[in-house]
Each structure stands twice: as C-alpha cells, then as structure tokens.
Length: 337
Image 1: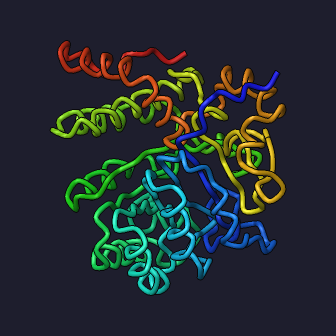
Image 2: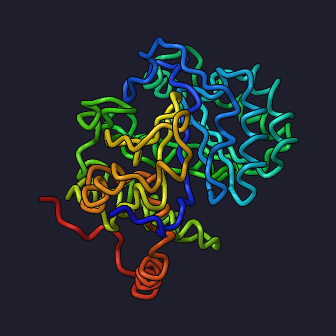
C-alpha cells in the first residue's frame, strides 16, 4: 500500500543540463552530446516544500535562461535556499547573468569547483587556464554582490597534496569550503571513478589537519563540516555511512529530461515530471519499492546526500561533536582494515 501521508521532500538536486565545457577525469558528464534543455515552465511543478535546491549540471551557465530558472524556483519554493554549482569556466557569462540572478534571489549561493592549485586543477579538469578562470569567476560573483560563495574540492590521489592549500585559500578569502571524495554513479558521474581515490593512510594527515582547523572555528556550521569530513575518511576505510540515507524521503534528484530519481548515485527512477505531478511521483509504488534499498544503501557519503541525514539526526551529530570538543580526542582513530 502506498503511503500518501509521508511528508514531501525538503531538498532537491536538479541538473538543468548534462552538457559540459569541462573534461574532468573524475566525471563523464562532459561526454554527453545530446541537447537536453527542459522548458523553464517544468520547474513550476517542483514541490513547494523544498528548503534546499542545488542547481547543477553539466554546467548550468551553458543555459542562457539560468536567471529565469532561478526566478521560477524562487517563487515556487519560497522557503528554499538556492545554490548554483558551477565549474566557473565561463566568467563572461557569469558576469552577464549574475546581476539578474542576484535580482531574482538576493540570497543566492554559489559553489565553484577547485580541485587543486594552478596546474593541478587544470590537469584534473582538462581545460587550459582552469585555475585562472575559477579565480576570475569568484571575483565577478563578489562584485555582483553574491554573499555566499564557496569552493568545492573533489579529493583524489592526483590532488590530495593540495587539499591544505585550497582550504587555506578559502579561509583567507572568507569562502565556504566543501570536500567530497570521488565517487561512482552510473546515472551521473560515471563508473570506475572510485579507482581515483587516494589510499586512506596516505591522506590521513590532510584529514587531521582539516578537522583541527574547522573545529577551531567559532561557527558551529564548521563543526558540522568537520564531523562530515571525519566520516568521509571513515567511509574511505570501511565503506559504511554513519547515518542512514534519506533518498526518496528527504531529497531527490531530477535530471535534464524531467526524470525523478531517488538520488543521483543509484539508477532508481520513480517518475517523470513532464508526465506526472510531483505528488503522483512521490507517492508512487516505484518509490515505495526502492525505499528499503535506499535505507540500507552504503554506496556514497557526499555532501549533497549527507546533509539531510545530518539535519535529521542533528541531536546525535551534535552530541558527537560535543564529545569530541570536551574530550579532546583525536578525530581519526579508526584503524585501516
């Protein structure tokens, strides 16, 4: 029997295109060649319950209507924090569209990918002047009045030695910092990417450093990030999530063809927003059938699928953070198997 009393989701990860102008070694999205731009009216069908909307790609700024998309989502989801994830490789388009985006949502947040310093980022992303373009885009967003800007670092063996440098830059420039360990996804990043992960023992010092630095902050949000990063390391060791996944309950993934999935990691489709209302999809039998597998899934521990679990279990996470603060216990005490 389908449960029609369960609440609507609070978070959404929305890919507005799979077209991409990058050539990342850890993601195969750029190999897509199909035109996949949905009409902007489709975003009027999103649930009004959303409190967090991550607009991503591919590269969102390959769409000339990105300001309009932001405006529609802002009106449709008045409670939502809207975030645009971009590679930052189109500074001229960011400069062109940022004022309209900020006008449509003055609280808009941006996260730009930066996977190393200088030549390292260029090697990871496969684009000439990749580092310089990101720095230019950050400056443009600041000039446009964006207050919430951050850099996202995808950890691999090729760039593990530059994690500290990217974090230090964020701290110096008052930018948010996010860390994700490279993952596989048959419907998004691609397969075989886990092989790019560093060996946990080789990166333990970097995680210890990051935890220590974030726990020094007076901002409790950084303590939460420290906790997440601690378990990113533990996940590399044991391949176990510290909290159950909320895919299909707290959040969902929507691709550029209006297909709704439980998440962006697993090939678990539950409906199509062009053909159905969101409520029909959310209370559908396919979703109910996937829920047990989602609860038991240990196939990722990344920011966009972890933050809702952390929020849902904030008392448990908070108690763990307090224990770490009061005992002074070293963060990474787990033994490598």
